[in-house]
Image 1 (cartoon, rainbow, N blue to C red):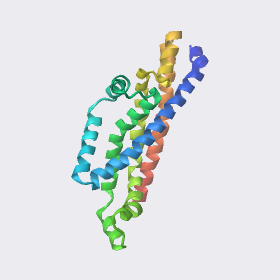
Image 2: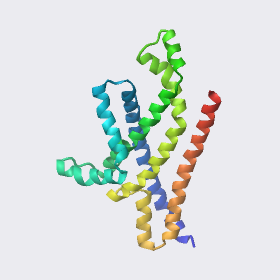
Image 3: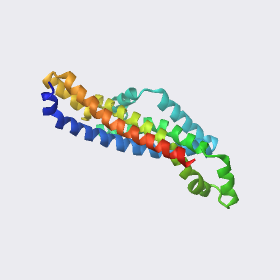
Image 4: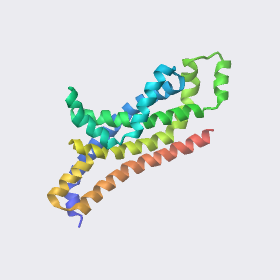
Length: 215
């Protein structure tokens, strides 16, 4: 029954490696932008904060699928022609940066006010307070929700198949078109996604327990 899956499993693994590559690159972009946008929301002036707020509302309000179609079909009309992989990473990174922003903003605000006061009492002000006293604690608090958002990001990479990026989902579709074994192949695809996401989920629970015991 599973002979077809076993015979094509190497192709699914190659697709999974592309999925992981897209996920890691997009997560790095989303993390960097998320930190910057969170700091902008919390500490920037009105003229800088408002464009950031507008960007966040747009990213949260427009489906990822629509964003992918826009990057692939609309940008070439204005002279911007990105390779599919670069475009996919850009869109996924921008999209999930909006969710990462809330993760980091919430983590920074969750640091007790007394920690800010203690830092000032030790002579630390401005960016020194953030870098030395607040951000290390915020990173610990942000760990579990960051992992959960990363899991959403990994599953979101399955949508890039619509712009022709050969990753796990598209690999499964092509094998099914050739073998007509949809149950076996997509069962294998689901299993690979589950293994990746479950591993991250277990790590997120570990971070959650560690953060709880550290309090």
